[in-house]
Image 1 (tube, rainbow, N blue to C red):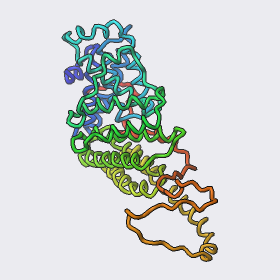
Image 2 (image 1 turned 135 degrees about the vertical axis):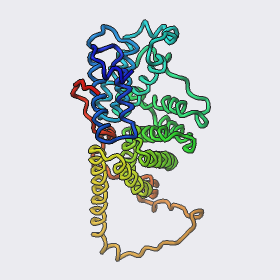
Image 3 (image 1 turned 90 degrees about the horizontal axis):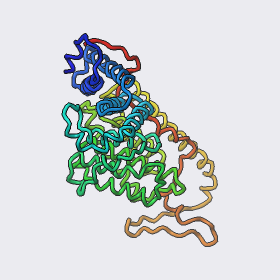
Image 4 (image 1 turned 135 degrees about the horizontal axis):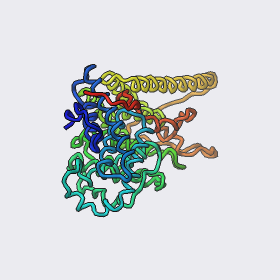
Length: 404
């Protein structure tokens, strides 16, 4: 049908936006990425955009076919555009869903109708999922509709042995806590990370592992923006475990040249999170994250990924520079250090105990546990959650119909 429409000389038809949307996504993830195929892909993407614009201007009320076309566009932009463009398209989709009150109330009967390209309930669920997760990345509230309870599947009873689709549903229900409207407490954030860690990475699809990592890092950002910004050792350990699983998934997908969502975001954001935590344990994870990011950049050499990799190396350099400056200040104390004698006794991990402060000194006990201390706070990291790294550099802003 796509081939027939590409060679047709007839006028636009209502389902052209769906056909060309499917074609653009198929070409985007094609194994054949030579120059000829890339040119053909750009033609398909621009045709899809032009057909969608024509359909929106033609109809007076949304239809399920329009919702399907908007979902396809959102999926496409998820890998090719920055977060804001994807967010706007997703919001347009959800507002269109909200306008279909009569049709959605009778969803069961509509689902039995023939002639629809996509199954309505499944299409609406994917629209809901995308809008929620893109909102989390932007720090925005998702667009709520009166039909959310009707279209969202229930939480799987056993997510560990569930299918990849059921595991995504499991992640969705956890992600609802990330909405700014919920104002989650520290305990709720910690519980969310515990639920994410409960998934067995050996039984998860790599796509699930990428989404799980981004979600865990989102919980961490919410925690740092709260009044209680400290992160305990167990929560940190879970965060690192989830992050390392995500890095391995990104590495495997990069080796296969599979441009899944968050393929570049996972190593970049995990690296930045470890810099922000600013402990010896967090710094120990940075070489692995940087190596995986370099692997992704080599496998899919887009300009945006290359720029993000340069930024990551600059941030590492900035951290190193700050540590060097701090050491210079400590070196100024060398004369005083030589006037005192320090003795250290080697003890096993089981026998080692933290001694309390000397009587009369107002030093909190927590200061003796350096892993719990934060630092590296002079740099403004607030822009990082909004920095999304598209996989491709394609520009479909010029809606010109091109023949096959």
